[in-house]
Image (cartoon, rainbow, N blue to C red; front, side, top):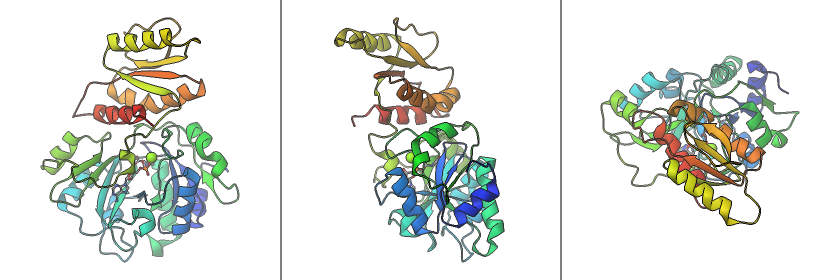
Length: 341
Ligand code: TXA
Ligand code: MG
């Protein structure tokens, strides 16, 4: 089953199978995007409620945005969306565009837009390119690939995480897996709605709002009139442990002391903090935060680790807000992980 063979994975996808697929952001669970039954199996494997849109992943930017072919996924692509694609694809950016007919309700959740991206991981692109080679008449192929975690849980950033979340939901006869190593970015792609006169960031990621504004020359709009983005549910990306957010060393210590004084049995506490911070005896380090790229890269692994060693309470120190970098995406994910379930 684990062959690390893009052609075998492409053959599985073309036949309606599912593939655990590495991308540069997080691992995805991929299924053929123009096959409603493959996409239905994805939802079932994840336990994801129906009606949540999935992102269509395509091998290259020209194919993703061509709107004149009968196999197009999108239409009416504004110039600013092309500029973003040119700058950031392949990479951690998803564009939400008006859908063409091929992007059926099964990928759009019934909305008239579709999310599309060209992943930055070579293995992911070569699988999709192999589908195009095998079936040129239906190129450009797309694979729907939600993050390879059970609904509401932490996204996987290593093959082992993805396998432990979803391995038992796969059918060894039909499905396949690819191990592409640890994901280089570590948080999900930036989602930019490109259906209005100016871009609107629906989910922050490694491509920052400042990046979007610099490349398009436009100010981003607020996400005020609530497009549905399930990743935007208040509680999401949640580990099993309770998670609280500290702003500095004092608040970290206050949370730790309160937890240690609270109950009868000493709780198992894990921290995510800069290495210079003092932590009380008996509290374990989950992640020593050096900078925001490393924080993004290692955050989900730290949350998985907390679950693996049955931490009761995670105290995470928020990074500084940095509109230029990935810090705001980390803050967004930490807030959701800490939200009441
Ligand atoms: O980095 C990523 O984007 C990863 C990797 C595997 O590519 N994928 C990912 O997929 O995070 P998923 O399904 O876990 O999250 C996709 C998010 C959802 O919150 C969904 O609501 C939003 O994208 N989305 C997809 N299509 C959309 C659309 N047409 N309009 C608004 N939001 C959309
Ligand atoms: Mg997800």
